[in-house]
Amino acid sequence: MAFPIYKYASPMTFYGLAGKLIPWFAWGAALLAVAGLYIAFFVAPTDFQQGEAYRVIFIHVPAAWMSMFIYLVMAFWSAIGLAWNTRLSFMMSRALAPTGAMFAFLSLWTGSMWGKPMWGAWWVWDARLTSSLILFFLYVGIMALWSAIDDVRRSDKAGALLILVGAINVPIIYFSVRWWNTLHQGASISIMKAPTMATIMLTGMLVMAIAAWFYSIAVAFYRVRGIILERERQTEWAKALLGAQ
Amino acid sequence: MHWASLSDFLHMGGYALYVWGSYGMFFVLVLAEIILLRRSHKQLIKRLKRMRNWEDE
Image 1 (cartoon, each protein chain N blue to C red):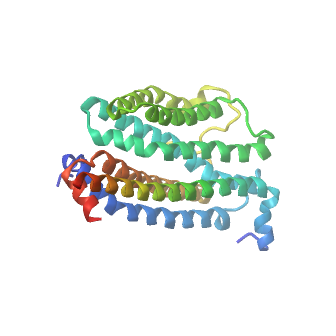
Image 2 (cartoon, rainbow over the protein chains, first blue to last red):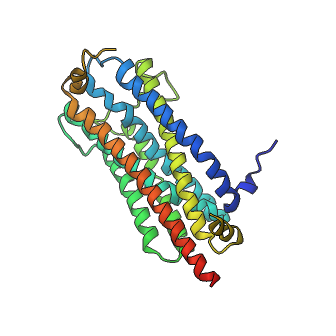
Image 3 (cartoon, rainbow over the protein chains, first blue to last red):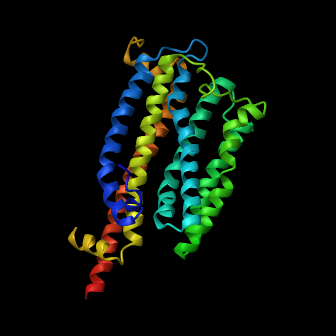
């Protein structure tokens, strides 16, 4: 059976669908986070080189991944929106941006909390760190651009263009540790080769990463419902909904 | 379990500031996002309802 994608591309149906899915993702995120934190603090052993300081990676890596992934999803929706002028696409990227910015900030914050004891510096102008900082500024810049333009359609399009131009930064972040001689270590996990870390540490990190995914989906769906309702307030279904609630 | 006591756990092998500083900021921001989101959603619904009532009159 084909998923009725065209049906769910309508803001009205998506409003209902998102509302039904939010509790599942929210509870999934909460349960996974509890399991992940249990592994992070009570199952995973002390690192023989870094001592307990390495436990920061259980949130640092998921936050860094999420900040990049959310950006790519926003770039995807922006491209779709610009190509087919689909209303919901622009709303989706708006709903994702604040959460992406939060994860970008958290990846910088947790990274510096790990860098201080390990490298002896809160911050260095290394290619990985600098490109991650640019990602955070991109998120902030995109949100500023949206709020600076009053006309919704123009605002959506300008934002989408900036998102697409800025997307070049994501592969730069990802490959920075390979292209440049960075202080930041290389990837611990890669599709091409076996991970270079203990299985239990990897498990904890992946569980936390999935929790971050679920969290982002739940929060973005919640936010997009508000955006849908505000933009569709003149339609019959939205009026009926607001009258009935 | 590799923690001898609660204080041993909190001490984090001497890295308490960095470990708890990271996790602390993480949960403060996540919690803040959830609270702010709920609040602004409620305000939005209120505002939209008010606008709808004006239109009806």
